[in-house]
Picture 1 (cartoon, helix red, strand yellow):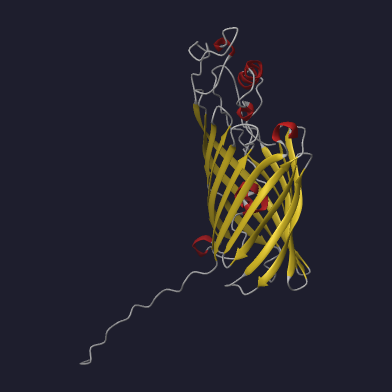
Picture 2 (picture 1 turned 45 degrees about the vertical axis):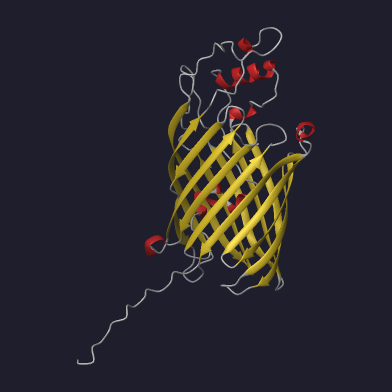
Length: 349
């Protein structure tokens, strides 16, 4: 799982585990901070690759993602992402611009990460007549904040030999509980048709500047670079059915994950302005979880709900429950034409 190092401070753990976790987190050789992730990765495009900014059929797109994970094991880890992007921003032929925001809260320490970024992409058509055959380059500068709340944490010095006593001093010092940092990400994607199918492959790097997010004085903690390799597409199966397969491999330090699968879609109405389709998907994340999702397209909207069934070595604690996730996408396909104001013409002219 790609998560932050403080997310392992789980409620209900014994004092020894908590002390070991804190020593691990605040030692000079602490585990590096890690990024968020979504099971519905294809539908959180700016968290997948900055080069996917503006890659949709329409003028403007709004994307909402929500993930709730590990409710059965600990305080649930919650992630919210909001983004919007404009294709051919200000009618610039090859430029696309977006805004991306996400909020993540994890573990007993209420470890919070907030990031805001501005993804930009540039399209380079490979042929003069085929706009589906192109390369896009993306850049995503931004800034973030990480913070912790130590009120609910327990420490070894607060155990009196028989039980935990919250009135005892923890003898721990947290001189800094919040830190701001800049971040830079970049990516490239190749879009191409194969028959009636539309496919893409891409690669992206996040946190390329490895921002420093040190809480303890005298220690160094960086957000390591996250690398994504991904692919996806739209594959017709006759007139009423089509597939939307995808895969992503992510690596950040020693943490990695590989998610692959597909959705099968049933087309109800193919008209662009009353488009309707239903879909059901099956996915897998390495040796960690099976994922199922279902949803629908309705006019300019796409709604999806997914659930992770955990089958990793954590399943005795998770009882095979992982997390559920929601994604909502709205695309404004065309701008309304300018209204011509009515002018009254006096009859005496």
